[in-house]
Image (cartoon, rainbow, N blue to C red):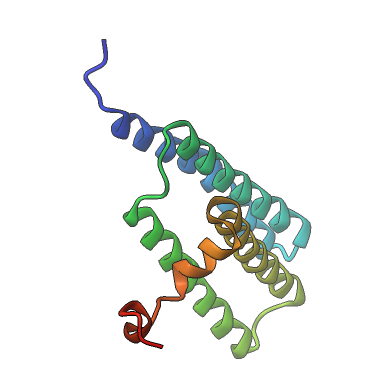
Length: 142
């Protein structure tokens, strides 16, 4: 008999998925960037996307969504890496393979985020997640 709660089991499973497949994807992506081979970097992006899909499957099995910490961590990492990518592109030291690898990563993750929102909440629900009603509309005044 296990004394662990389902939240602990979910946390361990999510951590294991990201530790194995997420770091494999990161390693392949960085290897592709280091050797200017877009194909290897694209395989790394595919590993990261599959890891994200695995995380969503675990959330479905445990009937949960992403925790607030997971959401903040994911958006923070995406924003920080995006900033580094833009600064690197503006600095001019980036090869075309590196540039296309970065575009592949951020475009794929951005599109995947939108697909997740649309499938989880529907079009109207996904929009309402970001668009808050003004105070006058909430009171019934127009």
